[in-house]
Image: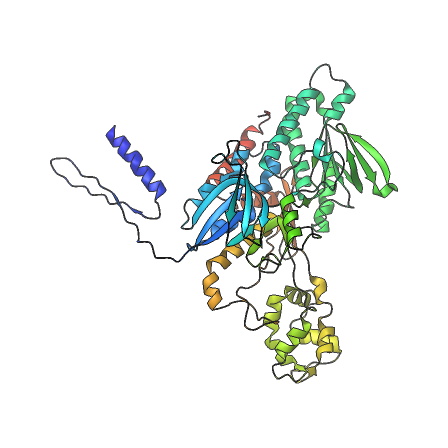
Length: 577
């Protein structure tokens, strides 16, 4: 018994101190017995200066990525979020149909933080006010039993990182909030799963009329983006591969309708993918209605405005409706934006270093923020003066090329413009502006430089609100915080055109790694870098491998793969729990 207890203590000590524990095993043969001993060897803590307090709001893609990559022990971190876990949101449509279990795509945040050298504390609460002037965050407990008897508490900060994501955008459409399901959180996916099964059970009751069965088994999805399309495909597979075998008497009454206000579904994808997806859905029996804008949702009917038929209003009876049409701003973010003079914007505006405009110590990442990329033409005079070191009033091509690297780093639209125009260097751009051969000795004035760069800013684009963008932003900001002191002394960023020296860090640059659109039937469309498009079963296996490898822990990786294997062997779980 004592031996078992000893090994239990030993196992617990090893799990809790993997980075410091050194196990020493001494076996001494004395009278047929042995001596076992273990001890810890912990490096003495380095004396550190007063730690800076970093408050992180949220536990989504951006916040979790930031915390996973933060390594500087000189920060004291307080994480505040109404949920104590990270959710792998790209697999939410799979949860709605039992392909993957909800527990398989969530990881407790304390598991992510516990092995870090950084001092991290977590509070399960929601922020309801940010006081940037006094550097305070006002929070409210989100658990039933209040913290120490207090529902609200205040957290001070030196740096604030806002990564709270966004709400579903209903566009103030009447009845949406009351009658539609959303698909943003794990709880949403579980609720949809229960509702789908409940619809089949209600329609299977003996006293329900034929017309009522058709209405109950009509599933309407509003929004033809990646989430809506993937859910429609997942639901179709679930119904046809699993539920129809269990409810054979109502198999001809099921209908799935996808409503999209635009001309096509998957509008952000390559046209080849859009066309394939629409054709496949029609072959599968999924009714794709483009040009249909939802104007009202009642308990049993959806009213649409048919944009292609002169605005005719039609009503569609339904049993379950899922709303997936974009994102909106959270209420306390709106209040904060009004406080700092950004009331007219859709999301928090940040600079290229993810710092909220107007706040030197507040950063915003993910869906709640958007980068306000500075225009070249706003700084054209400053750029000219910085390049004209001799103050001659003119620039040679050679002088301009000396600052070209800093220009491309500070204004990425310049590099993108050159690439799209298939220009190799700045000489090609200036040649287009002057209309003759450009040599290094030829000089140009400020007006000619304005002409050369006049169309560059047209290449500016907002980043999509995706998990990929949020994750890269979190990683980037963590690296900046890790090297904050070092870069204060030795800045590594581009030249300051409106000041002296260089910026501390290089600006954030999003690297697009591709995107997927699962279309059901073990077929997926993949749009990868280099304008490469792949559609079919091979892309589905690529999707499996990528989504398995991107899990936040080995535990969730194993669970997701296990769920996929179970589904292949036994089918999906059709219970309503």
